Image (cartoon, rainbow, N blue to C red; front, side, top):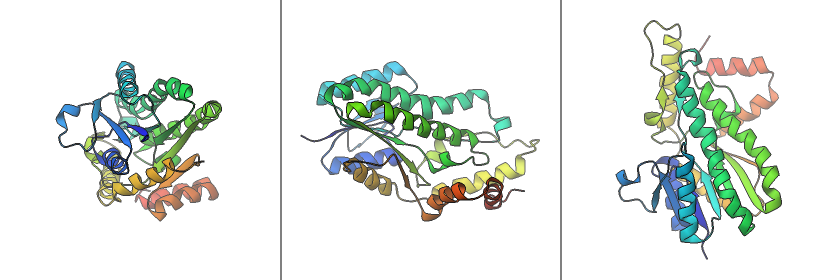
Length: 268
């Protein structure tokens, strides 16, 4: 009997790549989208879900259980990007980023845990970000929302392993997706003291995404992790330099690492 996989945010980018790859590998895949009716030609069924709405999450989980009678794997992939000087980022946008990137995945996990506990197995994979390992200029809110998820999953993993449930964090680097088009950009204000630095940094971030890796790399990594009997707590998927930046943060003095980031982004 094939493993049943539920992927949030499965209509584009990394989520779509994972869903297609796992479907071809014989998994029974269900994806989610806020507007599945707008998506044509999906390789796997897309169910209507908004991770910001608890009722929506619970309805989709119930639908998947009703159709498959089990949930083997959940991939928390849905998320939003956000950039801007923290001082100039509206509180509503900060809250939305945390609602989608942190509270959403937690509520998905809460919704599937009773089923996984009853069946005595399950694997929950959370797509975080290499950016969650460091405070990046003009991406501080995004970094913080992903870091919060990483740390919470470390605790939740220990609480639930007694039930035969596995939890894994997968932190991707830059991949060529449409995240830049869909994320919130604080506007570059003409009278802003951050105008020059933020404008240059935003341009650099967008170029990194455009030149990013193929999302198929993430799909293959996720497949390997699902098939691993005892997966690690943390995985990083990205360029060698992106993964090495995490090592440098761990070993370098704080101010040396900070200077390295400032130099990278061309900031004073």
